[in-house]
Length: 413
Image (cartoon, rainbow, N blue to C red):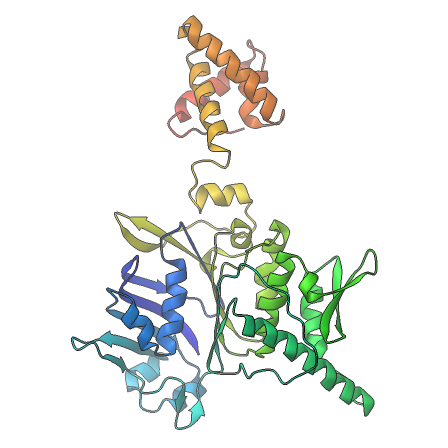
């Protein structure tokens, strides 16, 4: 079962808002305040029929989630209308009545039907900030997280549960080994982490602690001693792997937090490799993540006259440089420090009108020239005007180009 689309009449910044999703990966980007996190919140809370969530949100009126079903799922949903069966789509609609009651229209109980589960799992991984150290004194049975819907958050119980789970898997592996069976449980965690980390490896459990080995020195340390970025991978990725997700929906908010740009480039593949046939919906600010997506996987939220909508026509993004993405998809005016960009623009403006400058303006232009040469790389294309011979043909061509592009502040080389 996969989410096909979400419609919300009114919720926070989202008004009369519609968004479609891919069956495998959808990456939502947009400036702050456009509702990226709100979309994930709405999906999760609508699925679990969280009336408290909707009652606490002033102005919420209605949301509709449309799902795409497999043939087997359609057979289980025998109370759906024939036309919905044929299109493999049904709607789960939440209406708030005048008497403040909520009615879920379309499916009486989304989680089960005739005592059969129709969907394996829905997981919402919230944005994380920090992980505290937690010491486990002895292996104990972890809590059962295998409910229909799960939130992975900064809650201490979630993090402690993952450690307990890994430790128990380790001891089950030892039991198998003692009777001649091949251990396999910890190996899936080892493969996942070691496919991502280059300089250290997850080696298993020691003294009731998941431990890593630094490849260069052989030093062994616990998961609590991982860096902030490594902890994001360990706890968020491990919590998802713990759930044995198959044919599930995974919502992830800001997976790039605390991650080096190189890791951000690889994080999408990391989550793709958790389970099989999962639908992943991500909200992010990272151009490094976007550069690893095809354009059909990107959903750009824009706000026009206070209304948020999804930009329909975006250029291809796969393999683009960060600079290209920031200027085109993220719609930044410049990738430079704003103060440097303003000084560069001023220098260009003065240079274009060099022959008409007064003494004060000439002094300003020369001062800007010295300052830009001090800060910018000598190979920076924007320094071409500074370094070219005054009598060269290329200088004349560049000045003509600047004049034609001065409204766009663009200098092509």
